[in-house]
Each structure stands twice: as C-alpha cells, then as structure tokens.
Amino acid sequence: MEKIRTSLIGVTVAAIVALAAFPTISAALQTASRPASCLRNQLGVRANGINGAAGTIHGAWVFTNVSTTACDLDGYPDIQLYGRAGRPIPTTVKRNLPPAPSHVKLLPGGSATFYSSYNDVPSGSAACPTSAVIQITPPNASASLFIPAQLQACRGVVHVSAVRAGVHPA
Image (cartoon, rainbow, N blue to C red; front, side):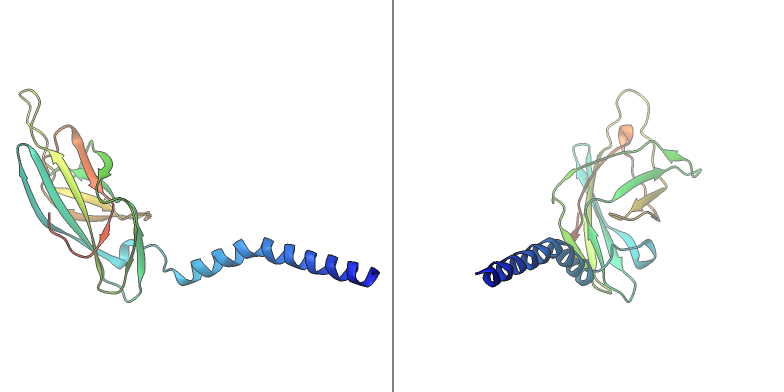
C-alpha cells in the first residue's frame, strides 16, 4: 500500500511539473515558428492610389518585403506629415478604419496594404497645410520609412487601418 501511495505522489508531482512547464514550452514553440516583426530595412512602401469626394480623401499604401527573410506585420502603422521645409506638420493618427488588426506574414517579395483617410475641407479662411513627405512607421517597428507624398489633412487628422495581406487599391 505504501508503495502505491509513493508511486501516486511521484506521478502527481511529475504531472504538476509538466503542466507548469507547458505554457513556457508552448510559447517558445510559437515564437520559434513565427518570423520576427518586419524591420525598416526589410520593407519598401509606396502609394497605391488616392481617391476622394465630398471632402474625404482615401489612400492605399503598400508595404513590400524587399529582404530575403520572411517577417511579420500585425497592427496599425503610424504616420507623420512633413512640410516642404522638412518641418513636421502636427499630425494626429486615429486607428479606426477597417480592417481590424490581424497577423500578416510577409514572405520575401510579399506585400501588405493599409488604408488612410483624411478631410481636406478647411474650417475658416486658412488653407490646410500640404505635406511634401510622409513618415510611415510599420506596425511594431521602431524605425520609419519616408516617401514623397502630398496630403492636405485639415487639422492634421489622418485615419488609418491595420495592415492586410496583399496589394489593394484605395
């Protein structure tokens, strides 16, 4: 009887240790199978069309993996507008356009699109500032890409979507 009790205690302790280690092992396996977030030097970015009516301008922007290694994009990009003299234009980014965030794995040469929207109708007599360059920071990245682009976002508010796989027009 004592032998059975000792065996049961040993099995119970082993099960507890195994279950306690499972989340750590599971997380390590998921991390090992998933590429790292895309870095600035792995990506190119370009405009893929702008259209609008009634004072709202919509744009599509495409990230392309220019590296030889797969990487991940997951979430919303950030944008900062710059004027012709290189000075920042006050910019407020609102992360509220569809689609919602989802994991996008970019294989070498693969692309992902995000959308932007802004109002170009001034309030009062002052014209809205026009950007010459925009700074785009990919989701979960610490470094940005800069591209020439003329956006006339009144009050500096730019709405953005999360990235989605593939190349899509505005």
